[in-house]
Image 1 (cartoon, protein in one colour):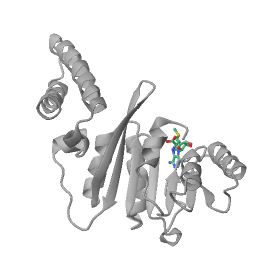
Image 2: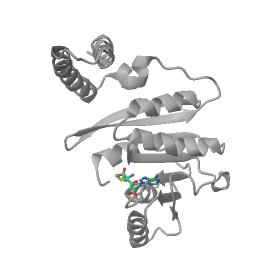
Image 3: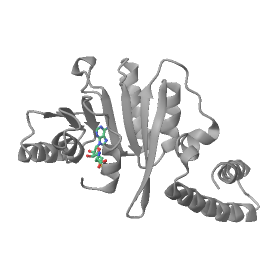
Image 4: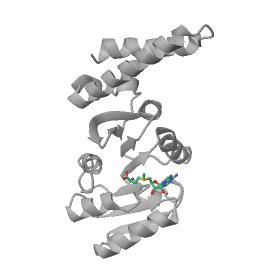
Length: 227
Ligand SMILES: C[S@@+](CC[C@H](N)C(=O)[O-])C[C@H]1O[C@@H](n2cnc3c(N)ncnc32)[C@H](O)[C@@H]1O
């Protein structure tokens, strides 16, 4: 696999479920999954022609054109129920964009059994959307690549109402239970940053009380739930 991050995503994929990779870029993920026999077919989609051409080229080079098809378009717009996609991967985008993509599909009653999401930022917003759309978070992993720490969220559709606390939405319901070393590091770093910002904010007479309260609340949650 091309990166630790993509490998961690691949490890969460269900065997033998038809997969769509949204924002596939080079199609590294579906190619690897099909070659390893984890899945037998996939659809690799991207909004931009350049990345999709890279995907087409790579798929051809690996002689997988009969197993991996490609689609040009925004998010899940070029998909319908007829595609029978069971699991969707959306990785390497901001949380807001991931939510917009999922929301567009849900407006058309297009839901999937499994979602595997890797927001580069805005994980909380993604978890919030999952909670309000009957998706239960079943697995979460955290990996470091270069200087960046990535969280990967796997969720499955359920019938019952899903409820997460403020802390679970912020930290991740699974990560906050398991507390892996990298997770502690991430939130220790965040705590240090917030403490510095709070000190500076409080030194200014025209300080922003709302921001101070928001940051103090996050500091309290980190101290109570993580450290
Ligand atoms: C940073 S790359 C991530 C590639 C791969 N998913 C990964 O995680 O390594 C983001 C890709 O998402 C595509 N993209 C951005 N917005 C999109 C959208 N609304 N719908 C589909 N693809 C999108 C970009 O063209 C780009 O190829």
